[in-house]
Structure formats: C-alpha cells, structure tokens
Amino acid sequence: MVPFVRAYDRLIVMLALVASVMVGAVFVLIVVDVGMRTAGLRPPVFSSAVSEYALIYVTMLAAPWLVRERGHVRIDSFLGFMPEAARRQVERFLILVCITLCLLATWLAGEFAIEFWRKDTIDVRSIEIPRALLFVPLSVGFFLCAVEFARMLVIGEALTAPGDGDHAPFEGEI
Image 1 (cartoon, helix red, strand yellow):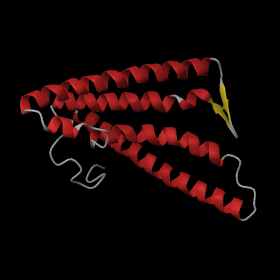
Image 2 (cartoon, helix red, strand yellow):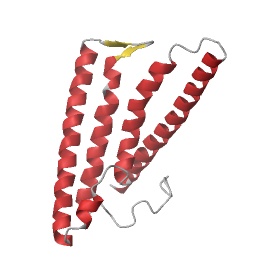
Image 3 (spheres, one colour):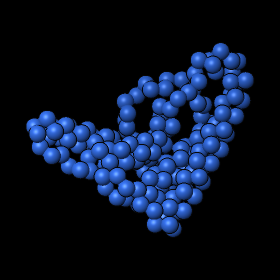
C-alpha cells in the first residue's frame, strides 16, 4: 500500500508541476502573440484558443494539489470561533459535502465527455479539437480532489490545520 500511496503522491505533485509549466507556456504564447501584433506581423491563429483550453487543464491539474496544501477557499474565520468539538464535526461534514460535490462533478463531466466522444462533437474556434477533451480534465481533476478530501477524512486532517502555508511549495515532495 505504501508504494501505491507514494506513487499517488508523486502523481499529484507532478500534475501541479505540469500545470505550472503550462502557465509559463501560455504566458510565452501570449507575449509572442502580442509582440507579433505590435510589430505588424500576423500572430499564430491558435494562440487564443490554446490559451483558453489551457486554462481548463491548468485549473484541474493543479486542483488536487491545492486541496492537499489547503490552497482552496476555506472558511477559517467561521470555524475559528467555534469550540474544538463542534469545529471538528462541522469540518467532517464539510469534507463530506466536498467529496459529494466533487464526485457529482466527476460523474457529470464524465457523462458529457462520453456523450461528446460518441457523437464525435468538435469544438470549433481558431482550431478544432474534440469537445470531449474539454471535459476529461474536469472529470479527472474533480475525482482526484474527491480523493484528496477523502484522504483528509480518513487520516483525520482538518480543513484548517495549524501552520497552513508555512512551507515552500513542493518542499520535499518529489
């Protein structure tokens, strides 16, 4: 079980690193596009569409890592005023809600991906890509977020652990 957990942990970190590289690539693509327009040249036709598609992938590739690092939106101020026992119960309930919503989003995105794949639907902008590819990262990302929330629940981690954000990103994780 430990090798599987280590491999899974590395997968989550690697997905976040891929998302980081994609952000850099989109930045370069936009700078090149704007630079070419400014110079009176014709920029690549695909730059706008690729940037838009990349936003979906970046968001969903990084989301599970953000859940693990508690970089997601939280309700610290509300929970901070509660007694410890009540806070733990509310946190468990909220984690269950998060798991449920992530699994629902996983299922819906998966259904859309399968439907669009079967119909061979194409998303046409400046480039053409199968519409299903817009929903695959949603399904995978939300599923991995559900796993991360479930992990919190199983090992008894809180949504608002003391010292959140006290270490550098990716520190000792690879």
